[in-house]
Amino acid sequence: MKSKIPEYLLQSGNDKHAPVNVKRVSVSFLDKTILHSANAVKSIYLQAENASKNNLVHRINPHVKFISLLIFAVVISIVGDLKSQMMITAFIFTLYCISRLNIFLVYRRIFFLAFFFGFLVVLPASLNIITPGKIILNLISFNKATHFWIYNIPENIGFTANGLQVVALVFLRVFNSVSIALLIVFTTPFPAFIKI
Image (cartoon, rainbow, N blue to C red; front, side, top):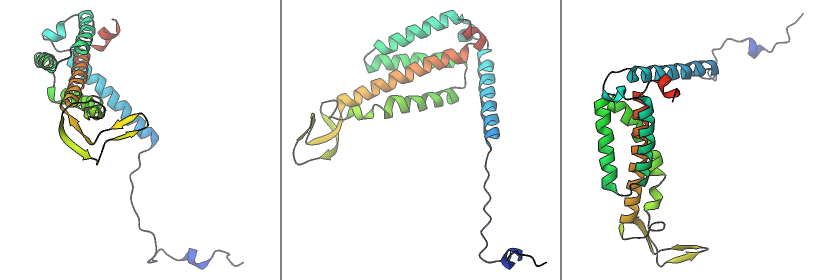
């Protein structure tokens, strides 16, 4: 009986039109889950290791830390000038130095969160469309001012001094809030924090 398989399927793979073998490394769902679980366990272990140090900040009662976290959150949200926010930033940085945490790693996380939520999100507020004031840096110039629907578009659009001050204030508020929260988390053992 004659085979019904076409001849081109029976030939060896020496064809010049054969597809190029591209090696891709694909990670399965199970491998990704194991990897993320391992990162979570590592993070918990590092937090427990940091919280077990024996210095002034680590020895403070968790209840006192929790109450101070609430007080700091209220103070940070109430303070409305840049100098006071910078003094709070310096005080929190001093607490980080006293607690002997890895400042580079912690502040890298803090800067990322503060940059995204406290700077990029609020940056449009520095334009004279939202915050009126003297233009420091002109971005766009039109022939004349335009009124569109309920919006008034000025002749020049740019960054204002008042707007940049608002952005800096919001950035420092977010930065200080995240800093004090992570300080409490990294200096308090997790079981003691849950009991509060």
